[in-house]
Length: 101
Image 1 (cartoon, one colour):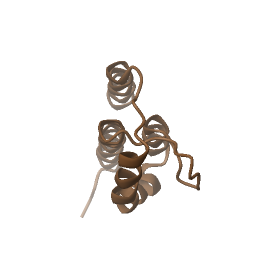
Image 2 (tube, rainbow, N blue to C red):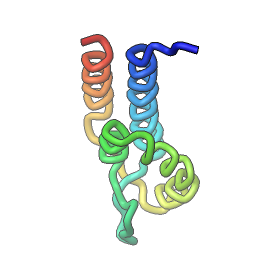
Image 3 (cartoon, helix red, strand yellow):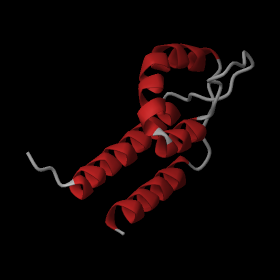
């Protein structure tokens, strides 16, 4: 079975871009951010999105595993994201640029 690796690479790139966009939208909607409790995964929604964009194969499953705990913490320590729509637009533009060029 011949699989064109270029097409497979593009499909994986699209999946990675969509996953990072979803992580940012989900984390900012739930007001996930840095909390006084600290810890290894104590990141803002923007950092979750950026790290997922860079190494989505690791960060996306990690976010899904920790999502419930992060949402619970965000109810206690909500963080209002700044310029959410602008950041989403930037994510979409960068993703589109990487996918189509």
